[in-house]
Image (tube, rainbow, N blue to C red; front, side, top):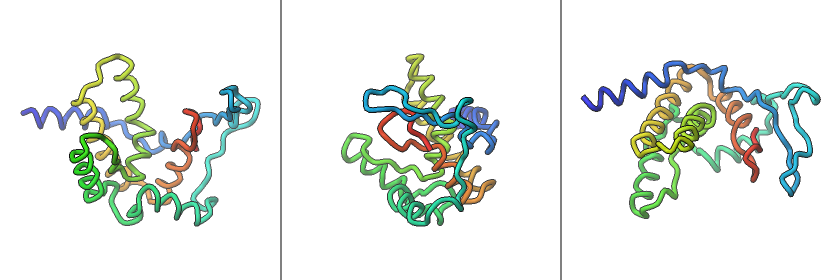
Length: 173
């Protein structure tokens, strides 16, 4: 009964998945070393933000990101069970979450959907281990759906236009 209720709650919270929400539409902000805003790309005064396409990316960048983040990206279906299990075993052995088993697709889903829910739960003070597991299951589920409905190049585009690239919290895409 618990598994059915848990499964339904995962499904209910992910039923509104829409790949259009994956595109990054917010402005990119450049900060100086003091944390002051220097320039805002994609703002009303500086024009609309332009997301890069897969064809815009140099192959060496694609290769570097795939090598560093998810070496089997072009082979798996959004969830890499061997990688996930290896990371889980390492984390159990060390007693710390030092390894991540998320694929590029899972990271993209996390940044587009589950991270906001996690932040809201943390701010409310009600973030539990069950919430953490539920969000990870949702991330895996949505990654599998994304891989069935979106091609690998589009997933990579969504990833590079949304993922965190830098030391500031708003350095994305």
